[in-house]
Image (cartoon, rainbow, N blue to C red; front, side, top):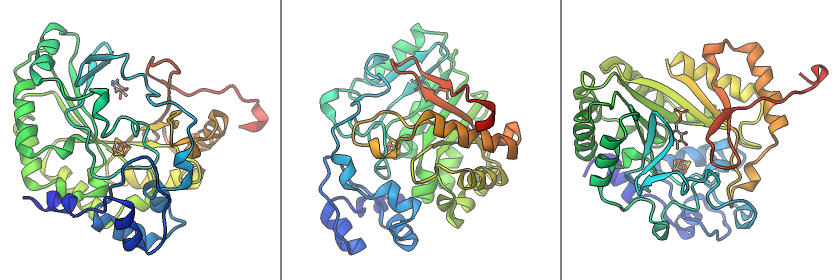
Length: 328
Ligand SMILES: *Cc1c(COP(=O)(O)O)cnc(C)c1O
Ligand code: SF4
């Protein structure tokens, strides 16, 4: 077993684990709990008012029944059990429902670990058939859950099979691992991706992180390693979260640090209307005001696009609010 796999096995997994680790009481919530111990140490050292604590430790607010179970209408856009095909040229491929941590604000929190939705357990052959029949698809986005939950061997075998489909030119991974368990991006993993650098036009990793507290020395180290040994492109995506990163200075610092590490900020997501995550929501006007201030301080390429999901599963669109001049 690799170090990161051991870390996941020994992770904090239930209310009792987190109470004894953090030494405080937490409410019972109807969603799973998962925090690897090394990362729990980081959260503990930042304290209860920190952005880390507020992102990963449960609160009473999660019991709220308002909001939607499937805010992105993923079920409507299902191509097969493992593929979501919403846009002509690209598909989300979801080979796992598991993640290295459970984020309390997750918009998929009602789907993760819920096998009754039958999201993920169709056979892989259907995926290959679908891709061969739909040659407009040129990009596979490994998503989930978190695709880096798969072993290197498994990732390699998927990439081998996608490399044989002529229309597939680009490969992308959406992951939170570089922040939560940076050891996962091992030399062997980087080597695995490198094998495919000549098969695909682009291999891209989109890192999910939301706050400068997540830019730890271990995170920086692994980013530098990826840049040094591969041509993999690094992008970031963040969710705008109330009382966590919903202010100009925090986001300015985050995007500046990412650019310093040669990670291009890609998307800033407006929070979705997910059940159990209502307390992280802010209005579109509030978000747009913050974003507009950032536009004055960061160049176009240093700034992510601020996007929001359409109300009926149409997909992401840039946020624009026509505010009176004196407000901007
Ligand atoms: C977000 C998303 C994508 C990726 O969209 P990009 O704009 O290319 O990042 C693809 N498919 C689905 C279903 C999505 O929700
Ligand atoms: S890593 Fe992503 S999919 Fe997993 S719990 Fe966090 S937000 Fe949800």
